Each structure stands twice: as structure tokens, then as C-alpha cells.
Image (cartoon, helix red, strand yellow):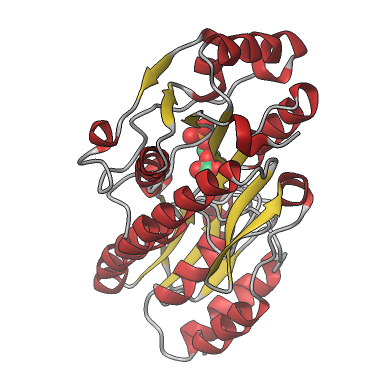
Length: 330
Ligand code: F6P
């Protein structure tokens, strides 16, 4: 079927965890639709609102003043019901009743899985835009919100370092990243961390203590260890602190869990530009008859990756960064 002939109305929604840049992407989808004389509808609370028919008409003017705002004006949710066939049937009925011909979902891999299954079941045109601070999606070097989160976290680490060096303390700082260490690895280097613990690499407790002892002997009086929340060292960050307290002398050890402050705030320039580019590509690809893809940034070009690959592929950490981090902590 040639989707391009029948697309006159496109829906857009955000799904899963919010991330800075989602609003900029909504704005881009709405304005690109207006540019091509296509109607645009916003759906509140992701798949939840899709199943409830919680829709709002969006014109180019309705999305003014949001490019610089964190969070998502359309709200977001993680939906259990959309995992069921009944839930997806409700969603399809609502889309048909509203004469919506395609949707753009801004979210992570769980949101893309829902879109892909929906496309397979109802042959409904869908397009994904990767929005998550974790950067854990295959098919794009950057997800929306990743760059902003890095800057937010580096700012927080710089501030914690003031206390660390004033009191000669060792700080364990936990950053987000459920399954991947992209945030930890980048902010660890940028924030001058002594060690970076990420899910992709199990440093082991002995080596951690050994490394901290070595840096202590080399004359360092304070240290920062960045820990990704999904780290596999086998202890949570508070247990880590206790372990180091018991097995090392000379450091006053503290823990700081940064939490959801990493997901908020105004998007960086990079995320705003990326969101604008991705929104244009998402709408124009649907109009060209493409479906079941995610738009992503690859070698600074906006490219399409099949949703299935985006979901199943692994977003790999940059091994060169690991080595750089080792050398920098000398
Ligand atoms: O996926 C983004 C993320 O921020 C993860 O890093 C974190 O583990 C998770 O979301 C937290 O989710 P919630 O806000 O639902 O607790």
C-alpha cells in the first residue's frame, strides 16, 4: 500500500521516561506537518492517552515557546495495557475515529516495541524518534536528552568536587543508566573521575580499592567515583561506600545519588537542533510512504533504521573512552 497517498493527519506523542528535547521534537513534528499542509494531533500520556482517545489538535502556533522547555507538554507514561491485544484494538479504533493516518512516537525501546507490534497488527504507519537520556538505542549516536543530561550531570559533579576537595573526601556519585554506561563514561571523563563503574565492565571490588589506594599514594587528597545505576559490581552504591570505608584508610567517604534532576531542565542547543532535524525527517519519511522506522543521527546525518533493528540492536559504549578515562586518572 502506498501510505504517501493517504496521509492527511499525523499524531504525535511522547512515551516512557521524559527527556529534554521532547518538546522541541513535538514542535518540529507539528510544524513540519503544517509546512506540508498536513493536520497534526497531539496525544496525551503516550499509549495511555491513545487508548483513551485523549487527543488535542495542534497547529504551528500551539507549539510556540516550547523549544526551550524540559519535560513534555503532552505528558508521558509507561503503559501496561498497550501490551495487550485489547488495549491496542482500543487504540486503533480511536485513531480511525479521529481520521488519523499515521503516528510519530517519541520515546525509548519499550515505546518502539509497542509501535512495531501495532504496525504489524493493523498495518498502521508509524515512525519513532529516540528520546531518552540513557542513549541506549541502536541506530543513533545520540538520543534526545542525552547531551543535556551530560551537561547537567557534569555541572553537579563540579559542584560536588568543591566539597570533595575542601574536605579531602572520596565521593561515590550515582548517575542514571539502567542498562548502559553512556552517561557515566562521558561525565566521568568530563568531571575528572578517578574511576567509572559501568554495567558493560565489571571492574571488581579489589581492583577498585587498589586503584583508589594507588591514587591516594600518588598524592591525591580527594576523589570522585562515578557509578552508573545499572553497574554490575554486585553492591549498591551505599554498600560500596561501606566496603571502601572498611577496606581503606585515609578517606572520608560520601555518597551522592543524583536521581531525576538528570532528566529535567532546558534542552541544550545540541538537543534542540537534533530534535528539530529528527521531527522533519519523521514527518517527511511518513509522507514519502516509509513506515516502521526510527530516525537517528549517524555520522552527523539523519538516517532511518528499521524499528526492529533499533529495538534488538545493542548500543555499544565507546571503548576508546574507557581507555581515555584510565589514562586520565593517572
Ligand atoms: O530510561 C531513562 C531512565 O531515566 C533510566 O536511566 C532510569 O533507570 C529510569 O528512567 C527511571 O525511571 P522512572 O522515572 O520511571 O523511575
